[in-house]
Image (tube, rainbow over all chains, first blue to last red; front, side):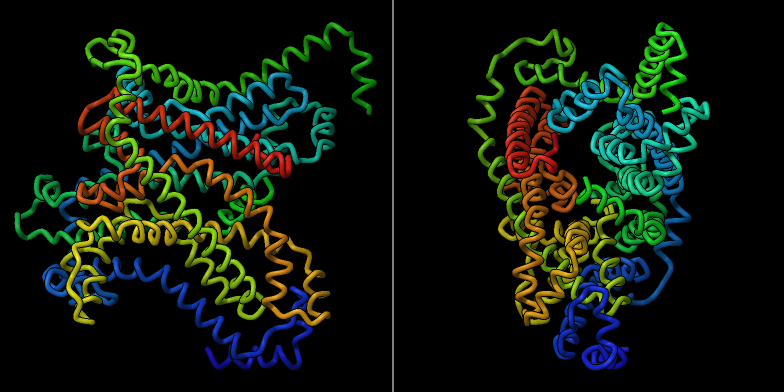
Length: 315
Length: 317
């Protein structure tokens, strides 16, 4: 692998240089620095992956070995005990998984729909209220009342604590994404809208069959950020959820991690007290909590990158 | 243009009626979003009066007694300095570290790009992966390194015969630890932002430079850096405008909310959370929150004003 890379670079400096450097218009450097560059970058990549590998290895390790020798890159005494334990004993885990899946699916769908409808209206040149309403959206980005008023309003006046809604509603509208979508919609060719109007399409029709299909990159990117937001959330749960049957996965992981007592006191987790594989079980739950998002990551990475470029450079 | 003749044929009244109808339709499309914003952003704004009240749950927000600036006086006599210092100093550390590391990595990836597409792809994905993890998971990963008994760091110290450190009880190490964790989780995002900026640079500039005999380093210094300076400026200014808002997940989860670490890790957000949930001092928590929101507003508006002066297109508003 490495040797073939080296010959690659030699080729670059001699023969095929023109072809390779045509893309950037820059000549390739000598092979020594190229090899060094590769080594450095491989090390950097490893630095980002190693913590995950350590956790993965812990989830396959024997609890006794973990206690004695600590964490390692390679599992000590390979076993599936932690997973078996977590999956057999924990109705809670299944329950929490279900909560997270429901919240993420419903939340993401609703959020995308609401935000893009709003962004569409705000992007229309003939909407006279667009400017003041856009300011209303923007203002929430620069000033808010802070945690305490929000907490009191949600718990005392809306009475949303310990309902599934409290995990969904507060994240429905993210002002930044509304403005981002609006900018994207504004950039769509105006002729298309005129043509649609002539063909007799109403605004909703235009939105559904012209704007949405043309905005897949923006919707994909925003959608992914929203998915991350919902799946990874533990904060709303921490504040507003006492009822264990509504505890999302990340919050469960936090509770299990924050106190061994919780694992022991949790009737679902407490098999025979003392036998509980605390550290490896935590690692296993962490792996299970990561699972879906890492899968999503591999499929959707492209969109995420597009989204960042969209938000970071173009906007 | 055909629309205009169509429209001219229609009577003026029906045209106006159509316009009103369209206006109402747009408003209806905005409605669900507006309702959500009003419920979760605007209604709570009235709650800032809590900062000036001695909150009694039984009497509600409006019934509680007014105490003027007492909550602020109490806050500033006590912890305000510590939490402000921690919030600002840690954020400043993050901004500098992120900028330096992200820029370096973006430039290196750009160098690697033509030569090893595979390694480029792997590195980029690896850097980006932590970005999708939750803070709870990141906190768990951190314990694998920092746990006093079984953590990897202490194993390493043991290997070179140094005494083990109880990381979760030593505040002095935490600025460095939190900066590393913040970098690990977030830097991949910024690498992509800067890489996109670099890729947008016209390649013919590099061609010309290399014909004139400029080395890679000279090209980086004279072409890449100056040309992405606007991007850097905007990103830094935007982060500066958020300097008063700490990442709660980082400071709460990764430190395991360990009281021993508060001297260096307690920030405004964790303080407010604790005042609200643990000590139950709602008035002071609200005061601290308002202090944060007002200074945050000043910083955002200031940063935006500065960006706008430099290039209006990049301003937030």
